[in-house]
Length: 349
Ligand SMILES: Nc1nc2c(c(=O)[nH]1)N[C@H]1C(S)=C(S)[C@@H](COP(=O)(O)O)O[C@H]1N2
Ligand SMILES: [Mo]
Image 1 (cartoon, rainbow, N blue to C red):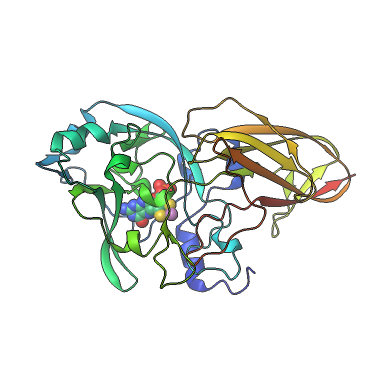
Image 2: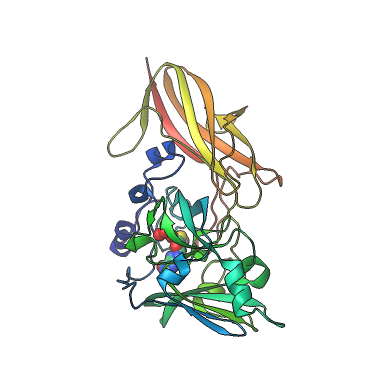
């Protein structure tokens, strides 16, 4: 399955790093360990000459100081790339070959979008709000800026932020300096980095990243369905110690405290189950208190590890009744593969 990784996929994988899974220990991911995905180049934005243009019924332009002078809000938000799990699909869709590590949680701080949109005037007949980043590149043979649109009612959600801080510091260049969009609960592509323009649209946006990418479909002829909310997923803090090449784990026999984190954009996490036999039998893990609706939730499970080889799994379910599948469903772009993680473990005597 993992055969035939091309140098081009490797090139993407080396630029766009994942969060090492042992960083699941931290409720808030240290900045340098947060996953990273940039389609084109990280732009070098000069905050002095940068401005944010907001085009509604009126046009408003703000410098960074003016954005910072507005009300300040901080939210812990778990962000996951829609392509997380792609490399485990067979055949493997060729793009950024994520395994499971395209996730992180940060304290994003900035100013709420809604009041700014209302000041600019959304107006009758508005259907979507378009967000444009400074970065440009070519994709699917089309030169473009990175652009994504949101339905007006999504853009007006109270928790949608224009963020200029990550974990209490100004955004680093790779995460969108000086300003990015944060849409809690949605897959990563929605959170436009290096934001420079916001425009209220009277027609749905038909750009590449909206109508071509980030859709679940089986063939190119199909319109498919746009990706939005993150599906439930749970990941384990890898127990014990790893083998260098295979990452297989070695754990001494006895009681092992297995820990992990789970999230779902669709609805709050309701349960996490753990299996030590590759998903044949399951037992409930203990959930830690929630650290806000939009951040992943910690869990733990006391496992009596007996010598031999086994496969540890965890499975999240949410309050809307969504649960992780055991096997992935294939799609053309390799999106939203939230099938259960399998961690091979050798329990030593
Ligand atoms: N301007 C811009 N915004 C962007 C992207 C990009 O390439 N350009 N990548 C998107 C994708 S696909 C993801 S998964 C997230 C990743 O955010 P991070 O790199 O801060 O983790 O940013 C999104 N915002
Ligand atoms: Mo992504």
